[in-house]
Length: 318
Ligand code: 8YV
Image (tube, rainbow, N blue to C red; front, side, top):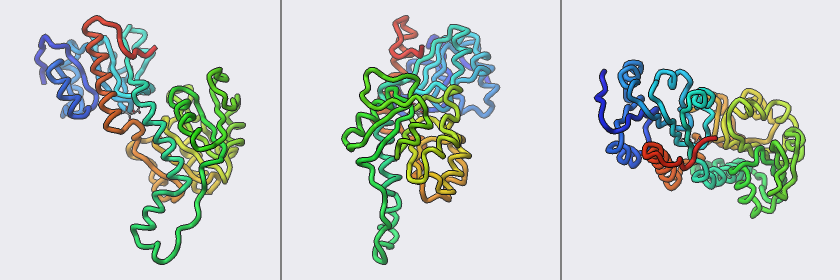
């Protein structure tokens, strides 16, 4: 397969964006669509000399190998805030710029964290099924657990963690957090030990960035410290939680339950999750609102336009 060099900058897209983004990108760039290629290697070989930008998504990233095959690459623009799937070391070594989409999705991810906490603790999906399948006519639903008045531990206190904290102040909860250091802009209780935070709280909400530094941070010991009356919510990356330990803890009721938006093997997650009645599952949809996805796409395009116009990037990754 040969690509037709054109005057428009060549952009390799790792996966599709919504139609409104594709419609805006098509006239501005020569797009090479990796997901449409019957022979991925052939497409890459044909477009490699011309590709100046990669447009990717959080979960697809850009590997060292992919970037190494693109000698003219100048920028990787990521639709998503998490850059854990982009090899930043390789990018930095070659002076390849990287952008992401922070801020525009913070409120949505925080909303989903609160939604998952309520869904899991109040068992909202089970209540919905109870009504729909007619069980309500036979018996009342079992009692559930309240959120307000509880102790909530935030794992990570970045943009998303701080926004979850703000959302939850309306729930009259007591808040604590685990982060690299105490934050001068937070009045909530700081824990230098994640295990201590887990022991203290009734609900642990993980908002960490993904990557090697946070891999398996919520491990078997943290889950043991959480205990059988406490809940876990994860809206960060599947990698931050030691998933086999979580599955064991859920199956053995060593923790009360969980609300999960992220997993180790997305989208083909461990089948053990499906058999559990103490988890609420979401398909990695923290930023998945129409409003936010439009803003994310716009930010990807604005970063690409700024780069090719020689203007400062809007949201460069340091
Ligand atoms: C998206 C994300 O699911 O921002 C991130 O890091 O994981 C999400 O917003 C993803 O990037 C969309 O493809």
